[in-house]
Length: 169
Image (cartoon, rainbow, N blue to C red; front, side):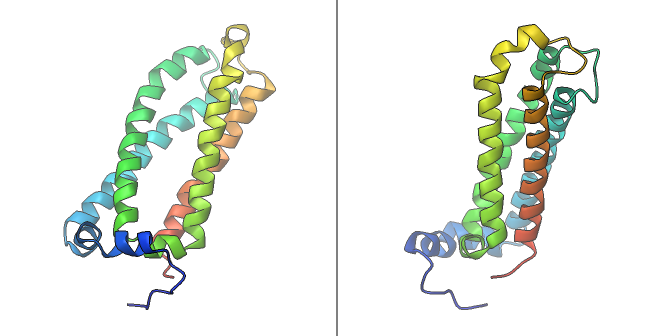
């Protein structure tokens, strides 16, 4: 194991070295179960979001009102996101130093933040005019851009997450 650089904050060291962090990391079963849960929840959450994003972009389900697609997929996306967030927190807890020192992890967190911001902007502004374009085969530019940004950001989150997993500090 590599020596931990002195620049790592005490809270990160504490998380990494805590009995919970060590227990998850060193367990023959716990870490793989937590990691598998994280990946499966990611598949659920992002998998259904892709369908919504593609509809927002006007590329699929053109005959379906966007509100209908939104109402169908968002409960699954939310459940998947909650499970993904909790399991991701446990993965971070078990590898806090590795994550803190990883540029890929920092990119992942930034992209996750931007994906959340994109969703918030969509929900707070673009969606307010949905009555006007709900049934349009191709939604307005703002809605299409929300879908494009969402897809790009989630691809970035997933790619940076995989890079974090396979790179040591």
